[in-house]
Length: 118
Image (cartoon, rainbow, N blue to C red; front, side):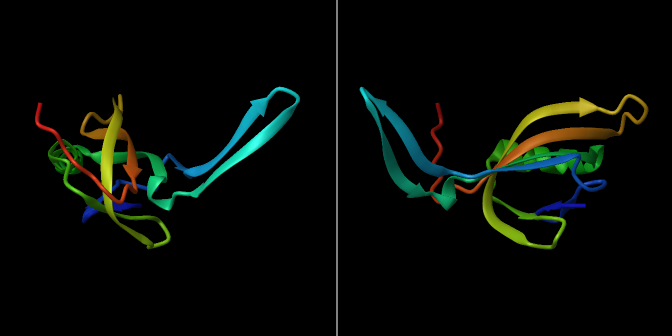
């Protein structure tokens, strides 16, 4: 089980992938290759998860997502990742249990966030 703020998932994540922001780039030149190293940007890391939530807990999660409220993520080991931005990317109802929703979402570790009201 994981937590987004105090909202628990129903069980452990179906999947959890960490995408690290390592800004190392290979640049092909005529006859050679150059490496551009802009360093490791920890604040650019993204955690992608697919979790099952009860409908009630999904509704709470949806409020955080739509309001763009920074969240804390507590992983299965009990480690807490603070001040993250949540982005829901996919929703799927469980056919046999309509009050449970699989939520695929990303947690971004950006150190700066701003919003525009278009």
